[in-house]
Structures are given as structure tokens and as C-alpha cells.
Length: 103
Image (tube, rainbow, N blue to C red):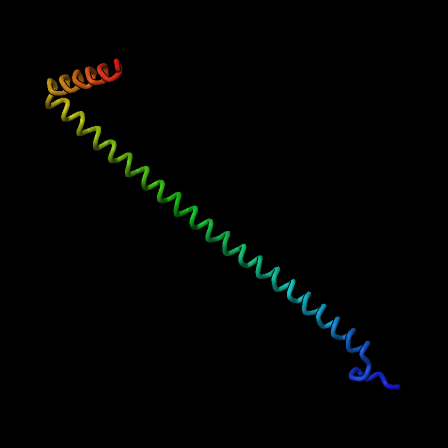
């Protein structure tokens, strides 16, 4: 009796199981490397996006500060140029708030 793989079903089944086990192990290793690669890419992109957002917020903060300084300077110039109109507007706003608060 010879041990030919084609004629002995037990040897063929064992060989097939071993081949499938090796393929599954290789597939697990490939999936693990793929997960590490994707995680690394996502981490780098996330860091870049966070840095871009921080830069954008910093630019917006500087823009708002410069605009508020400009508006404040314009308001001061207007008050200095028209002091009586400023007092009249302040008094009118006070009467308006007083009238609305009585209701």
C-alpha cells in the first residue's frame, strides 16, 4: 500500500487543512499590517487637519481683533467729532430701554 496523496483522502484533507491554516495566518498578518497602515495615515491626516483648524482659528482671532480695534477707533473719532449727538443718542437709548422695561 503506497502513501499517494491522490489515493489517500486522510492525507489530502490534512494537507488542505494545513494549507488553509497557513493562508488564514498570512491573511491575519496582512490584515494587521493593513490596519496599522490605515491607522498611521488617519493619524497623520487628523494631525494635519487639527493644525489647519488651529491656524484658521488663529487667523480669525487676529482678524476680529484688528477689526474691533478699527471699529473702536472710528467710534472714538465719531464721539470726539460729534459730542452732543452722542449724548442725545445715549439719552434716547436710555429712554427706549426704560419704556420697554416698564411693559
